[in-house]
Length: 211
Image (cartoon, rainbow, N blue to C red; front, side, top):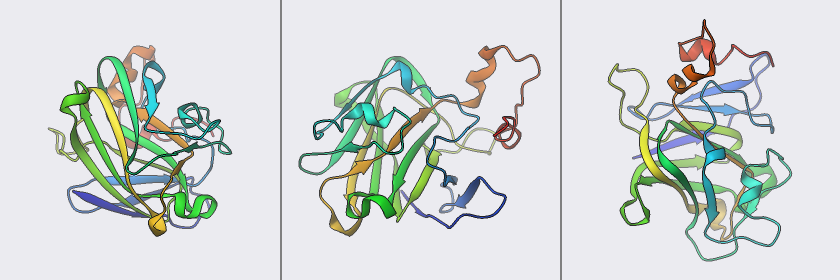
């Protein structure tokens, strides 16, 4: 299944633009700032081992997590390009957040992604397919297209390995640039943070932090 996202221009008073996707595919949240946005879902990528299919010297997988908008992973091999994120134990994975910039990267900008998950390299299966049109900013979306039991939102994926595959770039570009990537867990996992009166509704949690 595929979803289409078109980056819109900045809107006064809004830090995020919520873009509806296809029916049954949820929503995309587009933040146009270059720094990683404050989101209610916990960042779980720091506990994982990150590797990429190829990279130019100085533009490796570390550039995906350094929170510096001026750096980026630059692939240096045949398509498809991919990022593999390996966790030390089975993790609940809710969303993926990517910083992509067509104005900066032109034909290096990903246009079609496949997200795969599994327990090992030999059993990875596609859980989400995404099509992007000239993205510019941090784009956050669910890794699964399977609806949650309550009918609101989507189920998390439970996996040891998450793989993000760049199927195609804009303008048929060969190498790719990704300026940031974050793997996010379910909101419920923040219960361990010790807040005696936590926000539990996702819409409220998006605005619980002062920007």
